[in-house]
Length: 397
View 1: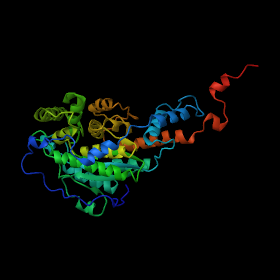
View 2 (view 1 turned 180 degrees about the horizontal axis):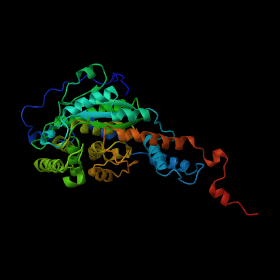
View 3 (view 1 turned 90 degrees about the vertical axis):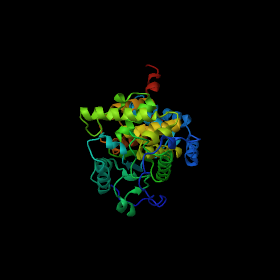
View 4 (view 1 turned 135 degrees about the vertical axis):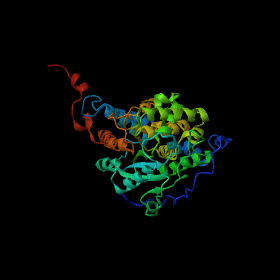
């Protein structure tokens, strides 16, 4: 992993403090406006639909390449997508990064993960040391790994002080969504704003950003979010996460069912959904999607948790999905539902369930290959090669 310092445009570490005393009241989730933040409103207004004209230009060129028509299949579809996103026949995809956002979850108190919350802190340190799965995969794909503390419970002040992580925690983990709201509405807005800021700023450095995450228990809020936006019961959206047995899986489903019944989150109010049942890293990832989309650059969505974040971003701005590339299909059962809701087809299906952004990193070379087809392969005219249509039109002797 690259250990470069955080860019100077990131603010210094935000004091994370302790969660508010006592449970957060449901009233704190209510607000006169569903989107009261000017940063969020301005970002949503800046997200334009991808350009159909540039897509057509890419289609015209790809259709004339020195190969049978559309012989590279979905990679050619992806090349068209890149042209539409970037408004260019030479989309830049060389400078790449996987942004791993990390936070802890109060819902782990319900026994929804076989791992203790301390593992979140330990894994962040492993990312920085270069010893995690994402580090290995990113090294192969040539991507930098940028780690963001959105709300890790453990002490990471030494990593923040040396710039080895981007330290912007909302709080030291969420509260237990099965007993009360996971966060206040203000904290939900803060997590989105933080993600937007990071997304916009990193877009000035990188051409292509992949999403990654770390947070013990975070498949639980992700499954709850998918249940809300896909109108699906928890038993259809919930998987074994980091390896639950049958008893643990049943407990996890019931925990999500309890949280949904307690809060009755409204899909028309995505900030309220995030506040009731979400996570700080999930909100941060949703904001990052919006921030990057506002700059007209592509985002590689990894697996289940990052796709749950994409559902939140989509609920805030449906146009944001036009800048998403689904890297792979996760082994988590709710992932396919989320992808279908977004209208995204994953590039890969390898049975992955690690997270961390590993699927996104694996898919980076595929995106770069799509760009190479568009920019490096000659057309029949450029190469002086007879196309199939012109050869068929030749008169017979």
